[in-house]
Length: 154
Image (cartoon, rainbow, N blue to C red; front, side, top):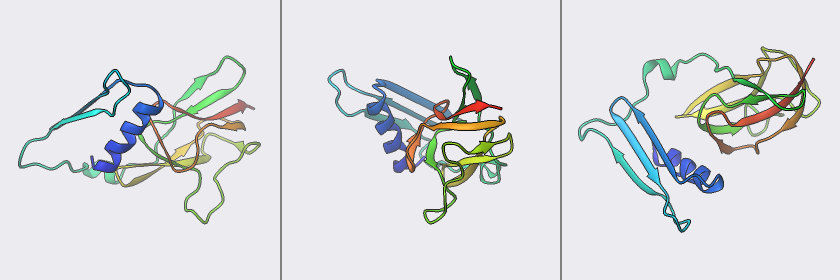
């Protein structure tokens, strides 16, 4: 985990009024805790002295991620983020967005990319329907389970 990822988590903590965050993976542990007065989070992370955090070979060659779906009170479904990372609506800054409001999608339609640890993960709709809302701004950090799109099932 690099400093950019830690800053993104801190920004999400501030934005969502989260006072404590903890992540543990094998030989890596990070704990962020905000003071009661809205101050910046305190960062504490433990790593073995001679080891640096490196992604596993599986993470570097991971297949396209699938986005979990959640039923919303109305007839719409939410396409949620399957991971923490940076949300991108298009494959490159010069390209058109994968989907817009009104776009028809099917389960295999790529709706966005989430960059996590320098790996670009294509996120699929996992449902057939019409996009009714885009809930995240381009190039903004997202957290696991955060709604990205609303889709009216077809």
